[in-house]
Structure formats: structure tokens, C-alpha cells
Length: 434
Image (cartoon, rainbow, N blue to C red; front, side):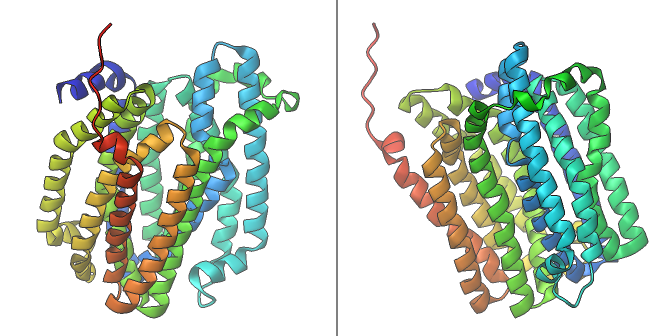
């Protein structure tokens, strides 16, 4: 535990932790406020529709930036003092993202009614919101491009301010739109709030106008297209497919159980997302960079079991407290209408516990760029979550979706343990000192 704390204090906290901590806290507060507003003004049925909109938007956003964020951060950080290479990095990412964003925006805009029927069914007429989404998407793509540049240049103080202002700004707009237009306002808010962050981020890069001349068509590099490709494919696969599968499962619940029940499942996944933010932040702060820098099986094993011994008991205790206080949480975050969500907590919490045990080890895929391991396991998991969700929803109603979540991550964890069996459980000879 001491080494863990020393690592955080000496290497991470000074640069990144404050940004993530503030961002996570504000995201949770904003999430609670918007969830409460949706529960009061829109209800469970509306929450299900908003969930579909969020999942669709998430996939479109990922396609629009081609999953390039992590790659841009890495190469900007690496070449920030090399003008020529930096120009290639920025130009390749900018124009690739520009083309992808324009294509996605055009497709969404001119197929708005079809998308409406797919997301909400022909009973609803939210095609105009899809068109708003299409027009806002380029702003989102530009915001992520600028944000990745700031991150690559380690401008953490600016990033902290942008996140603080952005969370407050986004929550304020969302609450206002929900208050004024109920479900329509909530859907519009989903479509535009992240894109409006561009206006805030733009202020943060005004003093970096010297970077603009570096972005040239002739600086596009096929070499960097190849370098970005692995980051892009790995990011895109999960970022596109997982939201679409969630959308399909929610639509199945709507069609075979009920719209309100789909809203209950959306409420449960929202709560899960809030408390998992703390773990995901911890993983990105410590596990990913630590796995990236170590080369020995012994050190890998040590870090995994150290995390299990120090963090997992606290996380498990936190989940137990959440389970015991589930009725209080529902009343605080939602309304009495959402009381049936209590029945979904057990399987969701158990699934999240196994999920964290699994993804701690799975971060090794990203740290060591184990491309095919990552893709094949993610594809298997996506297929499994869809198939088991349909099966268990048919047998247990909306609770079946949370049971499927648990079953999927139990099998996911089993496969992870099988892949890393030798690294985690084999006898390692003592290293001889020179």
C-alpha cells in the first residue's frame, strides 16, 4: 500500500489526479441533479428514451473522432519539441477526424427520420433532434481534438478549469432545457451539451495559435495513419459496439417488457456509472501507466494482487453500503416512481464487483498493446452480453438484464484468468543478483 501511495504522490497526483478528482466529483453531482430533474419532469419512460439517445450519440461521437484521442495525446506529448513531427501528428489526426465527422454528420442529418424510428419507434417524432445532433457533432470533434492537444502538452491547470466550467455549464443548460421542455429538452441537452464544451476549450488554446500553421494537408503522413490505427481500432471497437448493444437491449426491454421498465434499467446503469467513476479514475491513474512501465511477470503479478488486497476490500465494502442504502439512494437521485429499481441492485452490484476484478488484469492488453487478445475478448463479451440479456429478460423481465451483466463478467473474468494463468499463478524462479 505504501508503494501505491508513494507512486500516486510522486508521479501522478501532481499532474493528473486533481483534474480527474475534480472532474469525477463534478460529473457525479451534475449526474445526480440531471437524473433527479429527469425523474421529476420526464419519468421512467422518458429516461428509457434518453438512454437510447445517449447510446446512439456515444457511438456517433466515437466514429467522428475515430478513437484518436489517446493516440494524439501520446504523440503530441512525445513530439511537442519537434515541430516537424508535431505537424505530421496534428495534421494527420485533424484531417482524418474532419473527414469522418463530416461524413457522420451528413449521414445523421439526411437520415434523421430513419434514425428516429430506430431509436424511438415511429410513434415519436424526434427527427429534428437528430438533425441538431448532426450539426453539433463537428463542434464535439473539434473540442476533443483541442482537448487532446492540451493534454499532450500537459496543460493540466487549464484542463482543470475547462472541466469545472464545462460541468457547471453543461448541467445548467441541461436542467434549464428539461425544466422548459421536459423530454424534448432532455433529448436536446444530450445532443448539444458536450459539443458546447468546444467554446470553453477554445478559450484554453487561444494562446497556442502558433500550432495552427502546423496543420497542413501536405503534412498528412501515412506513417502516422499506421501509428494511429491500433489506438483507433481498439478504442472504436468498444466505444461504438458497447453503446449500440446497450441500445439494442434497452429496445428489446421496451418491446417485450415495457417502456417504464426500460427506464428502470437505465436508472440502475446510471447509478452504476457514478460509483464506477472512482475505480475507472484509479485504474487510469495508476494501473495503466504502471503496467506500461513494468516488464517482468513478477512485478505484474505483484501489482495485480496488491490492488486486490488494498483497493478491492474497500470497493466491496462500498458496494455493500450502496446495497443496504439502495432505497435511500433511489429516493435521493430519482422519485418514488423508481422504487422498483431496488430489485435490480443485487445483480448489478455483483456484476460490477466481478467487472473490476477482471478489468484490472485486462488493462495489460492496453498497456502492452495486445491487440488481438483485446479485440477477440471484447467481441466475445459484446456477443455474450447481448445473447444473455435477451435470454434472461425473456425469463426474468427487466431484472434479467442485470443478471446478464453478472453472468457476462463472470465468464469474462474466467477467460482473463485463463489467459494470464501463467503470469498470475505459475512459480517464478527467484531472480539472481549480479
